[in-house]
Length: 146
Image (cartoon, rainbow, N blue to C red; front, side, top):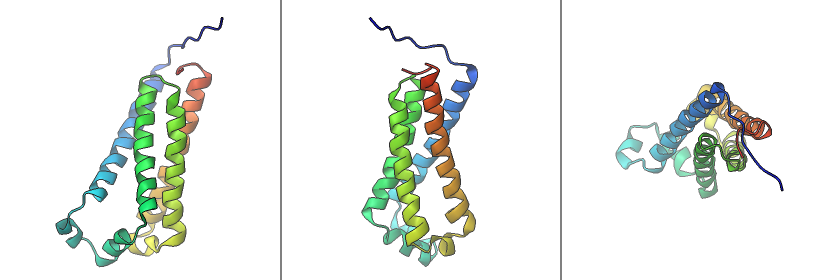
């Protein structure tokens, strides 16, 4: 008979998990802000930004949703010390790569949003996605999550 048991994680596990949750909550707010943007809000934006948003294919918006909600649920999984968090971080990372792959290679987002928002921020988000996937794998190997 095999017995699975978790090992009590160190304090920094909880710190990283909560920071990841806060990071993904910001992503969820960005997604909701874009998904529920009113016409009045769009009128306040430059025409180029509105055109870019309105011409975004549905699959890219779906990838954004998968990235955000997968990451958020993955962080909740970490806090609950569940192994499925790692699967959700992988799914989230696929969504991130699909979304930003489109943005980088198929749009003029750098011209419309500027270098920071179109190039630096996506790299930061991709890095965070990779870090959370790696962190969850480390947590599983150390049996902090099962």
